[in-house]
Length: 154
Image (cartoon, rainbow, N blue to C red; front, top):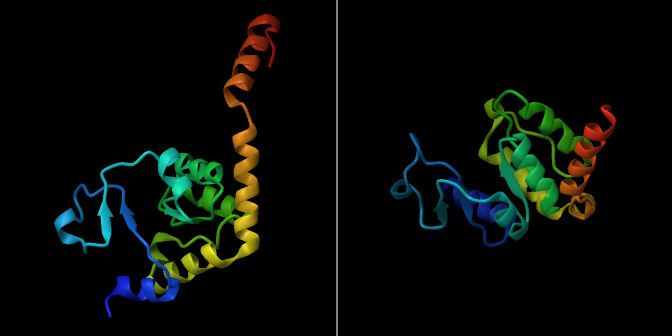
């Protein structure tokens, strides 16, 4: 059994893997038919269509996962990514992060099973997403800027 079969067997449902960037690494011709290779994808469009998401833990990807209201699995590499990985876990909207050096097929498969089957995690992620989507960030930013310009204070 190949590694993708292991993931398929553990999850027990149809899945599609999205490769964000193939530059300098895997090429689309290197991938099995059930893997979709993309150079880039708009997170705000893609994530709400997914059951869970696996990403590196950058601020933008993490925010998009939060907004989509789905469990987020973080594989942190560097810089602020370990912070966001820890925050995902603290909020209970994703399983324990898997540092890049500790990533194995078995660990990723276990995290994916948790993300799609833990009803509490799924509920918390959905609630967080609903709360974020209700915020009017643009209006808040405009009000803050206007307050600074008119009063000279934060």
